[in-house]
Length: 388
Image 1 (cartoon, one colour):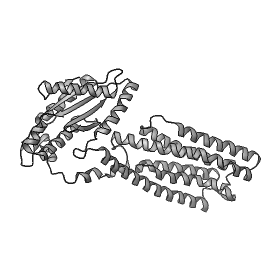
Image 2: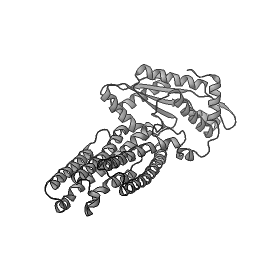
Image 3: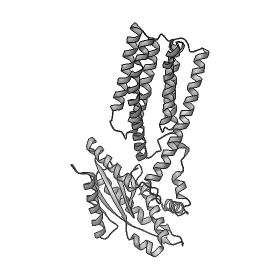
């Protein structure tokens, strides 16, 4: 177990402090949450990835549709080889965005979401460089062809539509800035008043976009926590657990890795409520939730399944590892004590069903089987972990 008596005493003192304004706690966003995404939960990262995926798809289709509509203007303003080169460039631009919009692989992967955004800014960057080459670097000084020079500003402004952490937003903005600076350097126009003014404007728009990105991320974090977290324990709720169990079942089949689940039920919980009151029962639930987090480090998919039942999803864990974790939690419950509202010392135990995904088994069958394991643990006298 590796936990001393002093550690348990400190844990109990922390957990038994009055909970004032849990809603405010759920809404609170730390500076780390806004700067980097490493501390975001796995379920939130998946939902944010899907949010980014949908917006990239929509914008990609818009660009793919609108790009060819400029061809008649090119036909009027350009002639000969320049028009043919620009036509090829524009059709390539449209085709690449169409391909990006049709790319539907793993919408819940944050790594792929970042790659999609990189491509979303990279395609216009290549078009911008190509158009400057076709026009001989004079796009800024040829009347209506100034429209080509606006593309970097349009793209950096569109970044405001995405919920990025500060480091992510900076990386994308700097990438766009390097494209513009590199192009100006290529044509020997970097050290001009016009180039400096355009880079200044690009920086200003990037700053506004990053402010909007952070505001979106903050709002998304607040809404997600309120919609997906159990207000009493702070763990994810049943809807999130079911959604992510479906995804983990698919991933386990694809990767041929084991997947186990624990269904945990506090023993005689009604008696605790009847004897000590519902406030004491709430404290027991909160203590048990934190105990699970402490005893299963690195396991993010832990949630309240309903009432006094909790579910833990264990990707990569086989039968023996899952059973060891279950017994570790049981042993920790034996040492834990909750100080009730009237300074009572309340102990509790837990019964646990354990199941490992079998070939051809779906989510519903897995949950049904682990529930039977929990039922057997209850029938056998409680305070047991039973492999389904």
